[in-house]
Length: 128
Image 1 (cartoon, rainbow, N blue to C red):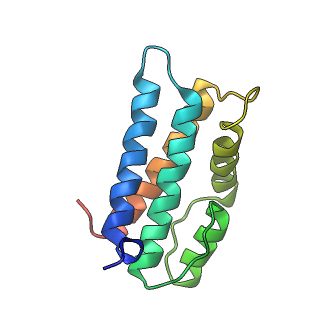
Image 2 (image 1 turned 90 degrees about the vertical axis):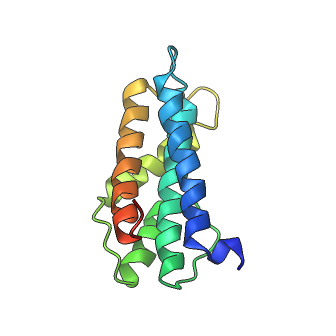
């Protein structure tokens, strides 16, 4: 099976990003930009895992609002406020460029949004 069509492959990637986001914040000197980036990646991959599980195609995108809307169109209602999805997407983009470092609070907020999506997705996908 093509890994891109395997929800478990998306879950494995999402879990790697989740762990990196957590570890980056646990350091003595937190890596807030890296944490924010990986939090967004975790959320994105979990949204894609749910779409794959439903057999729904999606474009190559990092747009969490688009992915969430595609989920809703297939009957998957994650229940995350679009403003939070936008915040998570913005923090991941900002984290890639100099001069726009994430604060610890912003990185923690990004991780909390990713955690909420992760929790929903794991329940939806019946992953322990």
